[in-house]
Length: 111
Length: 114
Image (cartoon, rainbow over all chains, first blue to last red; front, top):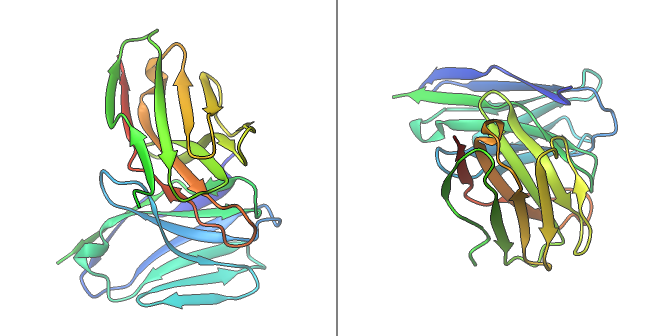
């Protein structure tokens, strides 16, 4: 059973556009929600993360929106650039325990 | 700082052969993890070690064994490789000291089992 459901599987966005990736979870014990970015041939790297006590976190062009009641969170990439082309994974964890990852979204930003 | 290193980078095995994937971290992290990454499946946890001397099963442990050799090193062994174990394997480490832990990933080992 997939603990964290991620959509879409792939996404194509024009340069300058907004990329939106969505994730949903069931386990209300999860208390930390990171997003990882992975370039081809590399390991995933932490991009941005949020705790459930806030509804939004912004770091540069990257924003996480968190809806605790709906058990959903999303990644927004503003002014998307070709260099943002990568695979993005959402994840969830109950602090100190296992991380559960989504299935990933392959983002392509067209110049 | 090298971070998390993995060896080998790429390996081809025949069905039934055995091999050990090596992982080391130089960040003095307590916790270490082994994941496999398959298309459409995301990252799935195989085994993890919350501290030196302890190991626990993750989501997909069958066919694998692990050893936490010391605080720095965590190895993954395939005793009798099967084609279903063809995958990209990632090692990760973290401090696991509470809220907001970050997992740092190695570059991966690409394994092909024929």
